[in-house]
Length: 469
Image (cartoon, rainbow, N blue to C red; front, side, top):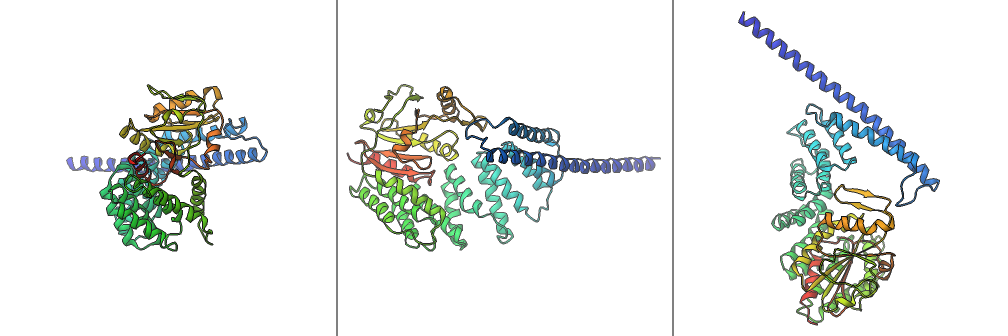
């Protein structure tokens, strides 16, 4: 009797397992079908948007035409319904979890996407690393703005790539995303080890990354001689470092400005370096990346060592107890302090990534340095708390939008708003963020365009702060 009972129990358990498996397989099939419907809806939106653009019905910063917006909303509804129905299940296949992760990325829920990619990994072969999923997971973690999480997964991904001999590796993770995450964390020891591995790798992209991040590492260690050797190595071998010649010149300028407190001629040396570089013909085969950096340097060069042009501010956000003029006399009232101008806009991701470092500088030198963020009124912006674009914004509402942005970003310096692009035109701003460092006498000592490499700006600012009047 007992044996018969046990047999029936085992048979029942077997049927339950089979039923559960069939249910999971059915869910996977249902998810695939629903995802195909979503993709069809998204293609309908893209086609409608393209047709509207060709007809001149789409204006930057304005609400989309009603018919296009309806297609977008329909596709988003399909996406949200899939996530609501399948997002909490724990019995799906690896392909289904990857599908859910992609949908969450579409919805900009990157932290949840990381979780789905992780669940996809658990469904795979533990002895054969799933590199495509690991690569996607790294990007999702990076987009989640969790540097610790991103660095951890990037480290695991690089180790998995190395375990299979480097086949199918993602160069961007190894040569850019991972070292930048370590810099954001201030993990210089781990960065030093990674730079050594890059240098030993032998691949051209790894060699270039080892050289540039080696310079940044030396700067943060206070090793000016090591940074100079790194810059000389890059500039001395344009064939090996074709994408970093203009970058090395900007790094040289930062290094010279940083030495300015000890060597009165160092700043002039840095300016000569920039001008000599720009005076030479652009070599054939120069990469698009380096051409872009040269364009930035060309915009910077006319201002170096010359009086800083005035800036206009029509409205201030976050002055607190600081007294600053409106109109055209802003810089005049700050004479005697080092001033850092940051040209930015709320929608600019590199601008937002640069802001924590600017806050750190303002906190470190509250009495000697004044950081000013300068933007202009536009009809679109960015909601930090919801991580989404905001459009359209009426001109009368723009100051309030910037105030919300400043609060969400927890900025510690004021933001000046101009009603027109007068400031960016005056300073020939060709890309943002553009940062200008002005000494106590009102002279431009350093200027850069783009997020740049962490550490170079700090080096230049500290050099200007220590310099004798």
